[in-house]
Structures are given as structure tokens and as C-alpha cells.
Amino acid sequence: MAYAVPRTGHLNRVVVVALVVAAAGLVLLHRAYRTAEIALSGLVLSVLSGDGVAVVAERQTVYFGLGSDTPLGLRMTPECTSAFLVLPLLLVGAVMIALRPRITRRVLTALAVATAAVVVVNQLRVLTLVGLVDALGVDTGYYWGHTLLGSMVSVFGGAAALVAFVWLATRK
Picture (tube, rainbow, N blue to C red):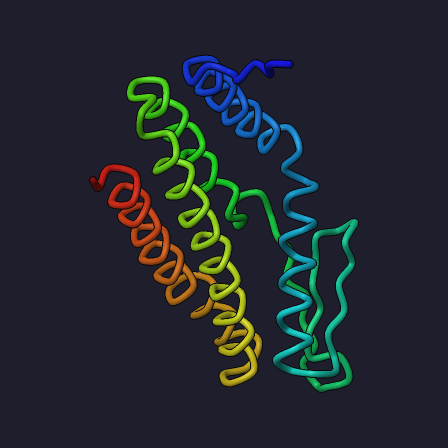
């Protein structure tokens, strides 16, 4: 008995549709994505700092410094999530595969690496903010962590992820 092997062209169309659906899902289910992202932040903070960390998933908020004089909650708002950096990667990946189907495998590998990098960078941004709040106090630490250093971590990390994506997707 012979088994039918799907043709490459059909498989590539499926991949393109899957990437576009994933991008749409990221927009439509952004709240669930932020909840997962803040839960990851809580896990990372718990591992690194030990006690005094709690996640309230329904609010997309991680609380740290509980039991200290300066507890603080960080809420993962829509503009602070890594989803805004993952979304264009998904769409650009879909377009690249649609235009050049023979690079599908490279684009998917690049997409996986860049997406992981963007998520890690956003976790580093949260850790930077928490570290600065611990070191400089709530007012000064939050200001520097949220407006300056945290933004720099996001910009440079996002740029590095984009460069890695393009390099991995287009190299021979």
C-alpha cells in the first residue's frame, strides 16, 4: 500500500496560513499571552529571589518584595508585552515563506530563535526593573527601570533578535 506524501507547495501554504493564524491569535488572545508571560516572570523571580513573590494571573501582575518595607506589583500591560515584537516576526516570516518557499525551514528556525530571544529579553527587562527597585527604592528604581534602562534592554534586545532572525532566515 502506498502512502501519499504531501507536496512541498501545499505544506508551505499550510505553514504560511499557520503563521498568519498565530499572529491573529496573538492579537485576539493577548490577555492570555500576557498572563503566561507574567507567570514566567513570577517563576523567574521566585527562583532568583526566593520568598516574597506572588503572581495574580487574572490581573497579569507579579508582586515582589512581599514581607519587606517596599513591596511592589508590576502589571504586564499590552504595551509592555513581548507580543508586540513577536507579532511582526510571525508576519514577516509568513511573507518570506510565501515569496520564497524553499527557505521555509530556515525561516521557521529563525522564527523560533528570535521569538525565544524576544521573550528572554522581556524577562530581562522585568528583572532589570525589579533589581533597580530593590537597589534604588520604589520611586527612583521604578523610574530608571521603566523609562530608561528597561526601554534600552527592550530596544537593544529586540534589535538583536531582529538581526538574528534576518541572518538565520537568509543565510545559505
